[in-house]
Amino acid sequence: MNVAVVGGGISGLAIAHGLRSRGTAAVLLETSARLGGAVGTHARAGYLVEQGPNSFLDREPATRALAAALNLEGRIRAADPSAKRRYIYTRGRLRSVPASPPAFLASDILPLGARLRVAGELFSGRAPEGTDESLAAFGRRHLGRAATRVLLDAVQTGIYAGDVEQLSVEATFPLLVKLEREHRSLILGALRAQKAQRKALPAGDAPKLTGALSTFDGGLQVLIDALAASLGGAAHVGARVEGLTRVDGGWKLAVEEHGRRAELTASHVVLAVPAFVAARLLRPLDDALAEQVARIDYAPIAVVHLGFDAGAVPAPDGFGFLVPFEEQRRLLGAIHASTTFPFRVEGGRVLYTCMVGGARQPELVQRDEAALAALALEELQALTGVTARPTFTEVFRWQQGIPQYNVGHLARMAGIDAALQRWPGLHLAGNAYKGIGLNDCIRNAARLADALADEDTVRK
Image (tube, rainbow, N blue to C red; front, side, top):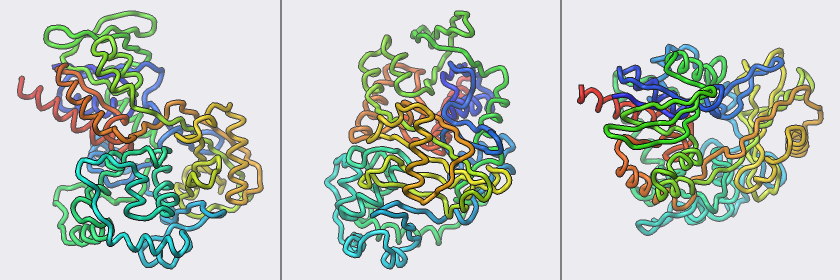
């Protein structure tokens, strides 16, 4: 068996690595001049900035296993303990997110009536079977309108930058739906799950997962560089796949690499590219399948880094803050990058990583980099009281940034999976389908790589 992996983001890299580490021949083809896709770390003027994903939660065994296979476990760095504190900008100021149910009831994160309504979640009912409910509708049933507008909207903003009225709760937060189905009440389900977790004994050979927000000592680029090094000459940059054709025993790919055209044959093809790129490659082959893939929406996002000299501004407290849409601000939120991971700055400097755009303000991402930096600073001043001007700015724009798992996504995925059965040896991978986070991509990549390597072993 030989596998052609199209796309050199984290999913494609992890799949190709997983295959080759188990002895299955694999080649990776990436259109751009670099590997990593949206994942990338840049050292600039005493700052270490991320162009896309910022970190990961150290709770996924597949991510730990990948780090171990690449000899990177010793380079994992947990966030500073102070980063456990988080804030939401609501009702005109930043308010701390309470860390426990008693603290929630005593807090000012919501008005008293809204907090009491959340406590009433104990009496919530289940949704009818087969309902693909929006996150907002689910939240209003369980938590009430205010908590949905503030808390639930803030949480999804930090992950999807989406529209709480459009996102599918089962596609975006499947654990919430599972708790409802099994326990009716989310609060009861969470309490029972914690009790069961305390009683469970960890497996002797399981990775020691901390659950902490984490990165690597040189940023997420460390993982990308290690994966690229493991692939060596099997990873091709500047290699654009122009078309796919089904042939006896596999697939033929038309490839243009550094101006030269060639044909590559493979028994399996993995399209580990954004959905809109996959749709373009699929359209000549299967228009109905391509149409389903093309319907996966993306939210544009701009990542704006603002750096301040030591002493110019107070070091911000906690991980950062999020801004619910009802506040009508132009900032989705900000990460206190220098507080969360102090090694990312030199000499006591302060670094804010601001997010702009999303599904509900996509027009903001169309602004040029100077305008985005100015916008982020204006919002930061209004929301946090920062008065100094930054001495460092860096902007990364993603016009099609974050996949949106809107209502209908799970039905669409069922249709895509069924359609793929018509094309043996063709696979889709990446964050557009079954999980958008770094951990999701690595877990799904490991599963696909293992399945293909197992098939290869049987054939041998």
